[in-house]
Image (cartoon, rainbow, N blue to C red; front, side, top):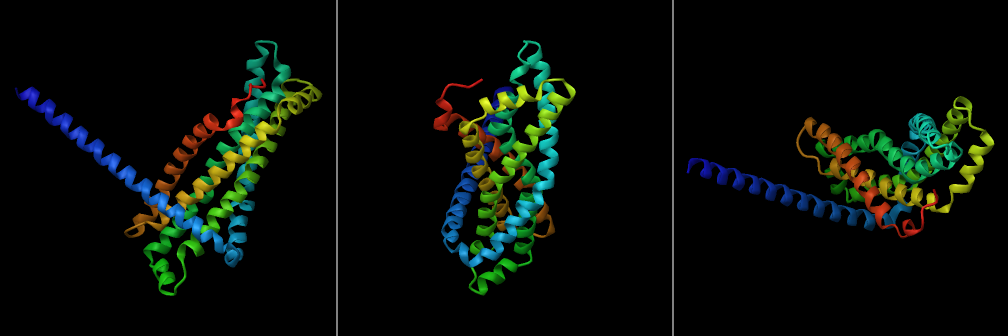
Length: 274
C-alpha cells in the first residue's frame, strides 16, 4: 500500500507541475501576443522616430556585418568540403555548386545568420531595455507622456525586420564564395562547373525561402529581446536573466518557425530541384 500511495503522490505531483508549466507558457504567450499587438500599433508612427530607426538599422545591420562574414565564410567552407566528399562517393561532385547554394539560401543563411544576430544584437537589446526598466527610465518616459513601445521597441523591431534579409543574403553570398574556394581551389572541381550548376539550381524559390524566413526571424529575435527586457523585474540580476532568456527563447523560436515555414510555405510543394 505504501508503494501505491507513493506512486499516486508522484503522479499527482508530476501532473500538477505539468499543468503549472502549461499555465505559465500560455500566460507568457498571451502576454507576448499583446506586446506584439502594441508594437504593430506603434509602428504607424515610425516616421516620427526615423532617427532611432536608422540608428538601430546601423547597429543591427552594419555592425553585424563582420560576424556574418566570418560565420558565412566558415560555414560555406565546411559545406564545400563535406558535400564534395559525400558527392564524390557517387560520382556527383559536379552538382556541388547547386547543393551548396540551395542549402545556404534555403536554410543555413537565414537560420545561422539569425542566430548570430541574436547573440550579438538581440541579447544587447534585452540588456539595454532591461537596464532602463530597473532604473525606472521607462517609467520616466511614461510620466512624460512618451509611449515607450513607440520610442524604444518599435524602431528596434522594424530595423531587425529590414536588416535581417540583407544580412542573410550577404551570408549566403559569402558562403557560396567560400564554398567555391574550397571546392574548386582545394578539392579540384572546375570553377566553371561549380558556377554553372549553381546558376542552374539556385532560383527564385530559394530566394523566396531566404527572404520570408529572414523577415520572420528578424521580427522574432528583436521582439523577444525587447519583450524580455521590457518585462524585467528586480535588480541587476534581472538584466542577466533577461539576456539569457532572450538568447534561449529566440534560438528556439527561430528553429520552430523555420520548421513551420519550411513545412507550410506553399512553394515547397513544388518538386525538388536536386
